[in-house]
Amino acid sequence: MSGIVQSNILRSSGVIAVSAAGLNWNSTIITGSTLTAVAGNGYWINTTSNTCTITLPSSAEKGDQIVFIDYLRTWGTNKIIIDPNGLNYQGNDDSYTIEYNTDGQSLNIVYSDATKGWLPLDDDASALEPTAPATQNGIFGYGYTSTWVSMTNLVNSSGVVASDVTGVGTIRESPSALNYGGDKGIFAYGGSTGDNAISISNLVSNSGVVATDVTGVGTARYYSGGAGYGTDKGIFAFGKTSGNVSMSNLVSNSGVVSTDTTGVGSARRMNNGGVSYGTDKAIFGYGYVSGAVSLTNLVSSSGVVATDTTGVGTARFYLAATEYGGDKAIFGYGDNGSKVSMTNLVNNSGVVASDVTGVGTVRSYLAAVRYGSDKAIFGYGIGGSNVSLTNLVSNVGVVATDTSGVGTSRRTLNAAAYGY
Image (cartoon, rainbow, N blue to C red; front, side, top):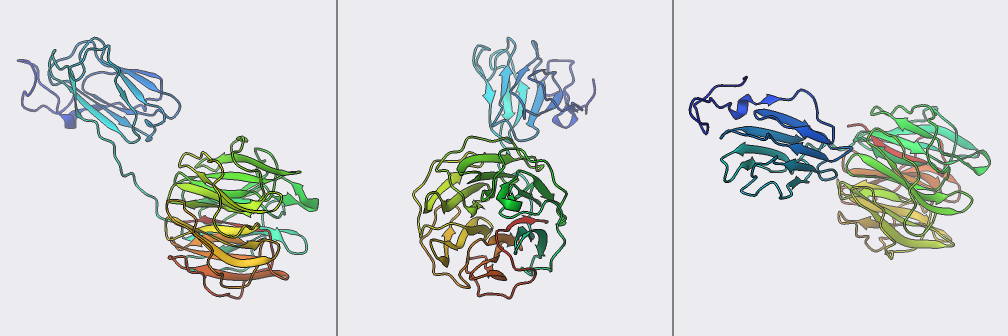
């Protein structure tokens, strides 16, 4: 037997108990669907792929202890099931169902006696998991000047836009973009020469470097929206192929784009109408069906798109959206037959506010991104012609007047946050 020898507590005469500090922690992460537990051990249980049924020892001594920990905070998705193997558990025989299904939970059990059997010392969830710092920087990328381009412009943590960087990857307009993995970005889909829809993607590192093309997954399209959800993942949704679509594609926290999911809500194109809110959810808003609309679709913290919600504010399309203030969002600018500069704030519960008279040059086909952890910037677009001007957004959602732009004037670009 290994462990720290302490006073002979809770054990029958002559048997020395191993203290909690002296548990033998299993060196292998448990990923299987079954586990036969041994007293005196601690186990890391990873249920990412499946439920795990844990069989306890068929015999136990008073003071026997076993600990189980949710290794990747996935018990809420795939639970653990405890089989007492003939012994009682909290005074109930082993015909009772014993399940633990809360993310971040740990289970510390000790055997008492034949009457009560195994008793939890604690079975609490760790409510607070470490939170990554907010992204500090942004990147504008791709677009259309008098032709398709792949250039990018970095935005630093003070909202200053850098000069053009020669682009990497296929030249295109109207890609979608989002932040993933906490500190990286991705551009995906878009329209290339002759408005041919494509499904390639380009990852952006946490230092703002754009990678070469990755063959896309899912239906090629452009004018789709992108947003983060669940703190470190993303979702692309809606867009246009030969017609408007409502499909979506989830993006993992390592930047892998999944296959098509049948969409919920009205098929439409929107350019940059997706945005995160409330730290772990998202909203897609406005767009074009057979005309301008103002409806929205909320996205849960697990990436599920909700049905249409009747919109608030002026119906319009080809607007931009971004987060601000740490947990809120803003839709801005757009076109409803004529270009506008109005904005609509979104609170941290996903409720869209009424129109706020815009500041700055009216325009559409622009992009927006957060910077400096809690502020944002609208940039580029087309008014009477392509522009490169920007408008900063404070951490309370106030849009500033025009700032002379840096970089090539263009429209139908997009932007993503990156970098701690």
